[in-house]
Image (tube, each protein chain N blue to C red):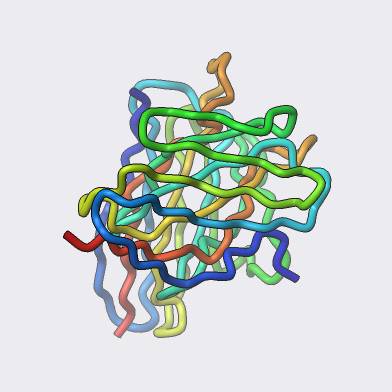
Length: 119
Length: 113
């Protein structure tokens, strides 16, 4: 089945560091990818929608200068948390929509997430 | 304002019995609903989905029921197994959107042997 690879799975870094998270669709093309954030015991909250070759669409309340999204190819989207602070510590999950899929049974395929811990 | 609500944060069921997880929604523009299973520090795993034009979809031990008039859906797992213990998220997709999903807060299911 479709696989989405997310890397790294866990990162710990100092406050002020910028962290890049990669999301790759391994066996399908994804013109649209999504970035979610999950706080402990909370829902997955959509942060932004990433479209290949164009600017990302951010949800209300998400700082686009803080969370930089690049979707330069049909198989790769990156999320960069710039100048990260402890309040940015969270679990970040990407998903990708298969552009060529005829069935909408599973409209998105999820990565395994990245646990970000800012000290 | 939460558009997708899972009002039970947790549910405990005996092995072999039925697990019923509930989900309510407020947006009548939702046209597709999904259930995901999630373990800590992992991404969601797709379980089953249902289109808004249907009222039931079954896949093995999993059945999803949709009551559009009540804006309510439920996931039935029967028989429940200890390996089903996880957090279950209900998600909905809005017609005309780019396909982004709105998630509920999840229900933690514990199946006891």
